[in-house]
Image 1 (cartoon, helix red, strand yellow):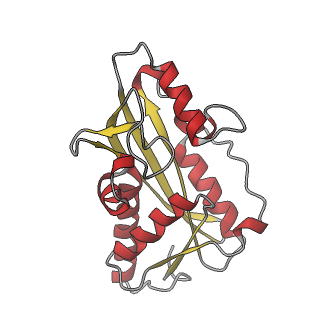
Image 2: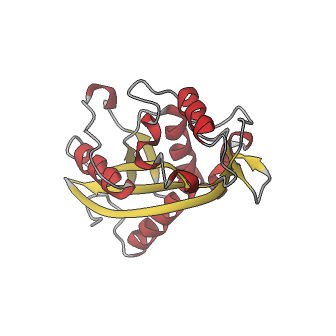
Length: 208
């Protein structure tokens, strides 16, 4: 069983591929989406992570014979009423980078004592233009006043995870996957797939 990951974000893709190798599902492989760079990306017009993940999975599933795996994720900060939320990747504007997004977040929280935040991820699996399942994961933490660590991507250097006493950017990828929003969502997906395998639905044409 092969899942094709609909992402051009290299660090995110690396996490997805690693999660597939760690899944323990003998028949499961996660592969980069073939020819993704040649496909015009869909507009992300949903109002939730679930809507955006589903729309991406459905859109890309039309280009392949098989299973398309898409995710949508972001940071929700309590003191900012849940912002940046679904706009996390473009928080600082249309030409946003990780650095500009982080700088803006630090500025907007400069006088805030409440630093609570959470990462949210929803993964969606689709085949032939139809969503088969969506599964979410959440990681609770705090936003630091200055970045720490050089691993990860996005808001990882600012996201402090209290149970481990480190930011996500200070964790090795496999350690981050064990506790992260994306890791939790993917493990939920693997549980779904394991049940499909138990029902002898191993082939991608049999799922759903």
